[in-house]
Amino acid sequence: MGKTYIDKLAFIELKDRKVLETKSRGKDTWYIPGGKRDAGESDEQALTREVKEELSIDIDLSTIAYYGIFEAQVHGKPEGTIVRMTCYQAKYLGELNPSAEIEKMEWFDYSNLYQTPSSQI
Image (cartoon, rainbow, N blue to C red; front, side, top):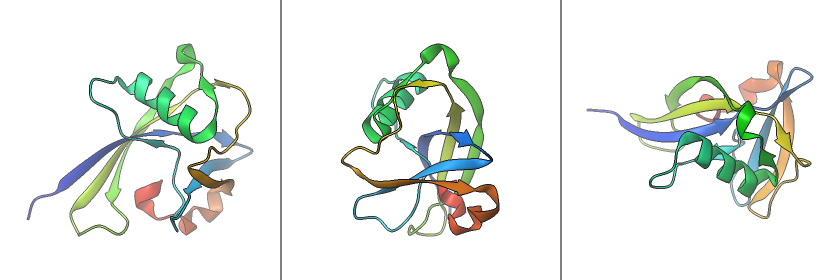
């Protein structure tokens, strides 16, 4: 059986050896902020839009830096459904504030990342 890929972008924010994660309203899993591209969007456009929607901040486009691509089995989906996350870091303007779609955000210590399913990292 072949694999099905879900392509996403992720915003990697690190502070004091901790990584920022969010939990959407009505969900039981923590995620790295980000999401899917809309038709015709570049990575930079999609990342900027998703981060604004989730965290109420504005990405400084001149600071966007590629971090890496990570793949993992998608949490709660059939075997072979793989999330492929293209990850970026960037500086931003404003204060990190979860939007209405985000129940909460939290900083996870690297040593506690086992609490986050690998498909969400």
